Length: 135
Ligand SMILES: [Zn+2]
Image (cartoon, rainbow, N blue to C red; front, side, top):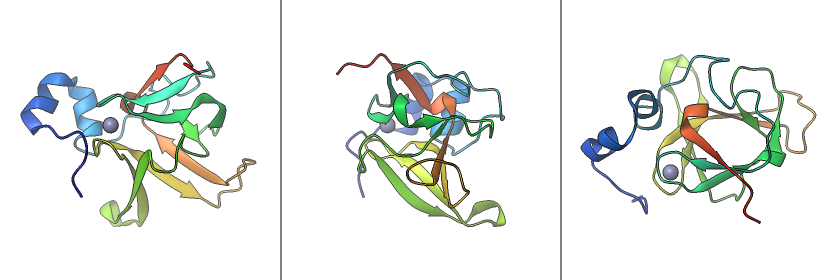
């Protein structure tokens, strides 16, 4: 499925920092407890760092203590794309930005967190940019 935002790998590489490129375009993972939004509770909207699409709201962010920013629901159900990921000998669900296809993280469910959805969108800080709430 083509994404609304499409760029060559050269373009992405020139627009993103090496750390951003490794996660967003190569499905890497930032080290746990290293990301700038890991413990952030400031209000606002988390946007895709690659294309600016609004992905998550701060009021669905919760303290999972897993080492990465965690959300229990995307801002809009079609803001993210979920893809089965069988890498590393595991079956996981990859979360991508639905607008540009960049890798954001993974979603896990049924872990028992006291959230409305019992889901944990485990997202790399480097994939996100927190913007003040515009509503
Ligand atoms: Zn994006």
